[in-house]
Image (tube, rainbow, N blue to C red; front, side, top):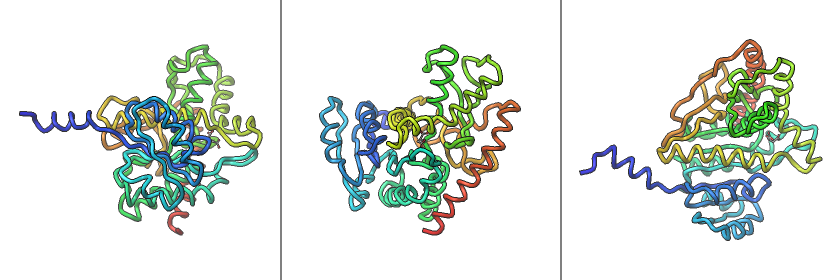
Length: 329
Ligand code: LMR
């Protein structure tokens, strides 16, 4: 006779996952969908966008993996796109142009994301939701408010994807220290814009031994990594490939958790009581219900503590914008 715990572990191991990408025909959505098509934890990949998504799905369906691909177009098919999803990754929305801040995208992108959130609330209320659309610092609190209105907000299931800040920190520190970036580990906490992005270099592994001037230059480069790409693309958008790489890495950690397997710790922007602001990115562990453990603030030195004070002010403003939007719509 199989005992209950063993039975549920076996059930978990057999679980197949339906992943929906919203904004799948876009600059991030296409490479992200390709990476998810190549993920062994995914059984069904559902693509949604306002146009051109059927072609992307046809193209992807020729990639020789076992993942089954479906596509849905337009607002009228949003419900079908999210129905029964285990994970919905939202990348839809407009990107920055040179000289713009992420916050300036809020009005437009809030309207795009709120449609998806309302559909998820109705048709996939157990899905994990990973939000890539900017400004993440305001869009995540907004999404939470919409879910609260339906009494469906589960703080373990809603994430702002900040993995690109970790990916950049690993790359820039790895280059600087002449170490393979895949061997660098550094927490990046706070939010996903300018000085709300806090790379905690005092906790970097391997240890960062250079002087304060080099460290500050690296922190600045990580914080402004998005602007570096926006400028280089000369008005043709923001980071797409590195963002897709980062989002796929984060999605994989979530799926491993759902499956009851050991998932790597990743930082993400979530509902939080770790600081005085109600949304904050810290290292997280994942399990079958989403966040299993929030590891809280890593140890900070004085320089990082000063950075934290600054970040909290910026975050507070964005969080209020997100909440106000949801309360008025
Ligand atoms: C990034 O960090 O590259 C993204 O948030 C896109 C942007 O607008 O910078």
